Length: 230
Image (cartoon, one colour):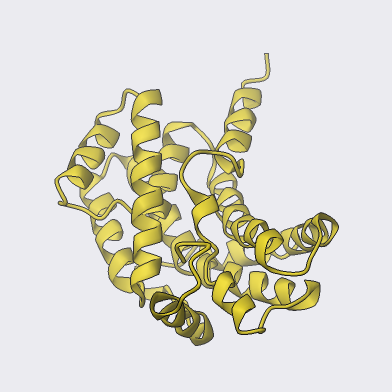
């Protein structure tokens, strides 16, 4: 029996848009971008998704890889450290809220699947407000416990960021399923380059300088658009 088969099955499971961590509730700023007519068709949607993927690649993606390695090494202190630093790294409340809600959901789900002390301790600290419980850190822990590789983790992370935006676009932008699948297919080819750059980065190297997206998030916090939570 090929032992890689269950791992691939889990990779699909964790990357599925219906995986119950609440991604459908967030648009990663797209709702405001659509409202402001910055994203209004397939080409502008593709550029927005590309920008979001790049922003996440060198911030959340690095945090996920760091948490993955810390979990593999059994270094709980390092997991808590990157968890706290990642939340401080975020410039707007909605981004922090998104990561914390999805992270706690994933931690709760994982605790029902894995009998791992490091996961139990992290979930207990989340519930005690001793650590934020961010989603990328949860992804790193879950992928490490699932015996999936770093590349698997990074692909799932990038797929999740892009697919969240494309799924939201079907509800607020004039695009079709054909458009979103074509965009997803094209952006997949850009993920290896992002991974090669991100895999050797540390927290000190992390960056997410896409100021327009943070401005859109601040507008969403004060605006009347409420189809999504971000």
